[in-house]
Amino acid sequence: MLRQIEGSKAIAETVALCRPEVVCAYPISPQTHIIEAVGAMVKEGTLAPCEFINVESEFAAMSVAIGASATGARAYTATASQGLLFMMEAVYNAAGLGLPIVMTLANRAIGAPINIWNDHSDAMAVRDSGWIQLFAESNQEASDLHVQAFRLAEELSVPVMVCVDGFILTHAVEGVDLLDQSFVDAFLPPYEPRQMLDTEAPVSIGAMVGPEAFEEVRYLAHLRQLDALERIPAIASEFFEATGRESGGLVRPYRTDDADTVIVAMGSVLGTLKDAVDARRDLGERVGVLGVTSFRPFPSEAVRDALASARQVVVIEKAFSIGAGGVLSNDIAIAIHHEQTLLRTVVAGLGGRAITRRSLEKVLEEASRDELATLTFLDLDRDAVDRERARMQATRRSGPSAENLLRDRATVAPKVRA
Amino acid sequence: MFQIRIHGRGGQGVVTAAEILSVAAFDEGRHAQAFPSFGSERTGAPVVSFCRFDDREIRTHEPVMEPDAVIIQDVTLIHQVDLFSGLSSDGYVLINTSNGFSDLGFGDFFDHYRPERLMTCPATEIALEHLGRPLPNAALLGGFAALTGELTWDAIDKAVREHFSGPVGERNAIAAKAAFDYVDSKIKETARASTN
Image 1 (cartoon, rainbow over the protein chains, first blue to last red):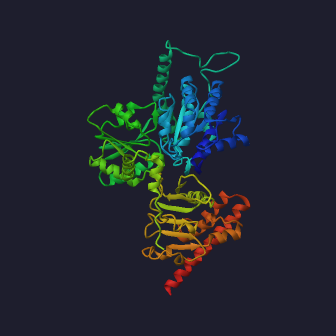
Image 2 (image 1 turned 135 degrees about the horizontal axis):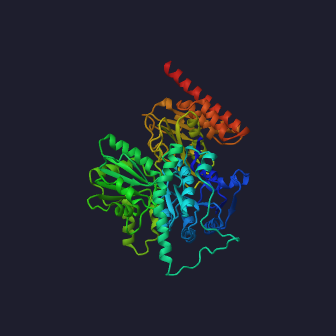
Image 3 (image 1 turned 60 degrees about the horizontal axis):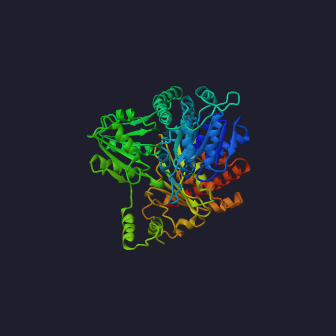
């Protein structure tokens, strides 16, 4: 049913349709309304049987999810930002053990400085953990992806993280067509665990593995992710057949067919980007967009095919590897591996800085004139950076940079003339 | 596409107002989007929310940079926040105050705007009368419908009642109607004055 609903609530309702048996979470900021809403449904009895476990930390949240999943329960949790980092060790363990936990990651920046706003630094911090990471473009896709995530996770025994832009999507009220229970029940069969802690048939899960088999265990995990490259599009296409909605899949091209320049991005910026591309197309520029939905596993072949005829590829990233450059760009570079393609990275939207269509159009304009540098920081206040660099040069005790920049910024709001 | 920016203070229902507007637009069969200006919300701190609606699918997720209408829930923000940034000269302004627009000290700031689209409405007084609490958000939505004609009164009425259920919904809907009538009569008054 189509409803005008907040992203977090749409996700919560969809998660409930997936009939999770254990939901554990640490309800502190940074969190979203997802856990709150799921918790309310458990309390009201509309989500049953389900045990909601209020844990003492994010580390415990993932640990409890691991325990629940190891006993054969369908387990779900949600987190964001520092919360994800606090559960980092357990995040790796969930993947290493091959437990099909589904977790929503409401993407937010990581401190310091303290920042609660959206970017992709948190997801990037766990990109090598062995979790599948799917990025939602809209709240419709964010909701739909959760059903696909449980299916994928349980088929392959791999945990899946559904990455949803914090605030921009989680707090936005938009029309979302919510699935119905009978569809989800048919699409998502009951969980059949490959391994299970069972007193009738006892096994050890998570024992020490030395050099004699560790590499093989990791390689098997890699193979399961390669299997996911087959299953992700298959599940998305089955979903499309039933609902008519293009949610999920590996990559999503938009107007790339004759494109000279293709912009690659992940998450909610894709919508704004498509508007910008339409505007530049109207001016005669041959530009297109490639949305990457599956970041892990990375769909190298699909990316290569989609970018095969592009002369220039511009990757817009909401995170970067400090001291190196773009993270997604690096994967793209390996995927396309032909030197004649110009590859540009634009770091944008860090710590919640709004990515406006106007700024995106400027990027596209510069790209079509071949004026884009290898690495650009969108809407960077260069003067503010230079002032701080000058202060640092002028005196040893220049103080904390973040606070210095804030003090610089503290201009009185432009007044309406009285 | 019609885009609205709402300015107010934490605790005045700024985010709720945008959400209700989006539900009203949705109920009228349009695509709609509402979202807060993401910040650490604190009671009394300046808060901004956004709403946009369109007959086509809305793909963008940028903040509203060039609003077609600005709703000011708290008149004390006028000299603190850049309230009218990006507002075109065809734009609508609705300010919660019992003063008239020309009493607000804008000088010649609005000289190039259309005077019939600049409006004040005593939404806090209306709210106090009908809700017993100084929460002007629902009332201003009634005023918005009357001022812009972009959403029908029925859609606002339904969305307000949907959001605040029971007697609270009823009282908010009455406050919204009072503000709708107030703004509607002011518009008619101005129209009469200009034809005379």
